[in-house]
Length: 176
Image (spheres, rainbow, N blue to C red):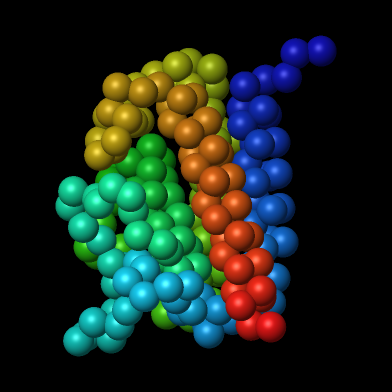
């Protein structure tokens, strides 16, 4: 039995998303904003009440330790950007993609992005997956096929979910 490429991508996405659900169960604002060490990247309210993420261009090497708030913002940033370019009319610049301000609102935001991405994937044909037309506006992967971009998204989500899980474990260990 051959599994259609879209079905495979959806299965991978659903597995990564079930791990996300597992790691954000009982997530609260304090855990999102907990800083595992001084100087870590996190999200902070600016003078206008928007929650903005720490960021440097070029990125330092190594990247600083991250807060859960930052990791969830990062998921929202790349997903908003990828979804907007691949299934919409573009995306706002990074500086305009802000963290929602609470754990509950963040989980809802990311759930909406997951639902939108999933719905977009379900409409695709093999020809769509092989095309670079939808990825042309992305700030990364402009020459990648949509199949490669979708595969990257699943891997990036899985990586970020693993980071969330590790940060949750670290927070719990340091609480004791």
